[in-house]
Amino acid sequence: MLVLAGTTEATTLARHLDGRGVDVTSSLAGVTSAPMDRPGGVRRGGFGGVNGLVEHLSRERVDAVVDATHPFAAVMPFHAAAACDALGVPGCRLLRPPWAAVDGDRWIHVEDMDQAAAALDGIGVQRVFLAIGRQQLEPFRRCSKQTFVVRSIEPPDVTLPGMTSILDRGPFDVPGERALLECHGVDAVVAKNAGGSATEAKLVAARELGIPVVLVARPPQPAGVDVVEDVDGAVAWLSARFPDLGQLRSVS
Ligand code: NAP
Image (cartoon, rainbow, N blue to C red; front, side, top):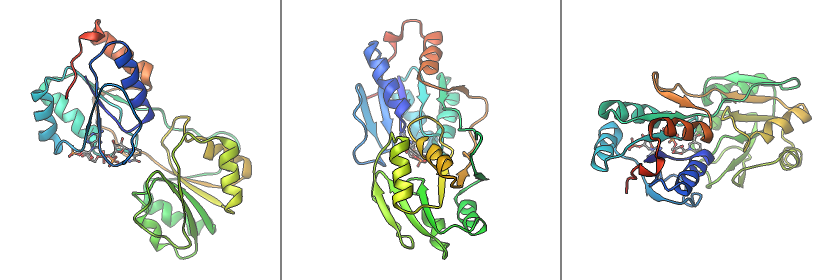
């Protein structure tokens, strides 16, 4: 049983399946130098595209794949869908629901980071909290009227105007996020619509402080793939196909 990892849900699922005696292996892209510990097997690094993944699944005789990569992983879900399809291996996408605005939210919806960077001048803001990780900072280099607070797990490679870098990993809470926004004089937040509770606090803090949030939409997902919203959904999906979960094989 292979879990394509990169999210809290992937870690929780691996822990749950291991606890039920499933021979589970988690696959990490290898972008984070100190990933969360998890039971079961762990492999790191890309497979080498769809063909590499097909070869891997077939060589390791993988019974099922749960793609629990991040909602903003734009490539891996398509590769997983194509590889599972090619081999007839059952696969599902674990994709948490996106956030939805509530009263008091001042959200500006954009399609990508280029649009997010372009939107900042339009709303006349100066000190921007980029809660988008470290890999998509490049578009903000063009911003001449703003300075930035960047939070990421690993140090960013890109330097932005007046940048303050904060190294931290969620989950985050509302008091902490409020303190961060106030302490750095932030007047706008840029975030990906990742969904889930672990990183939602920044949106609540922004709402409480009346700060606008430029919210980047998710990339497209492959069509025709079973989607579950959470770990329970993934376990139910697996149980429906493998009544005795303990018989599922791992990859190693
Ligand atoms: P991506 O664009 O979908 O994937 C790029 C390439 O990385 C894939 O083609 C694949 O290489 C490799 N890859 C991705 N996930 C992998 C996995 N779980 N195991 C093995 N190889 C994997 O993904 P990304 O946005 O670069 O994200 C990379 C990882 O970070 C993902 O696991 C994702 O869950 C996690 N992550 C991403 C974000 C985000 O905002 N994008 C946020 C938090 C965590 P090959 O083609 O060589 O197989």
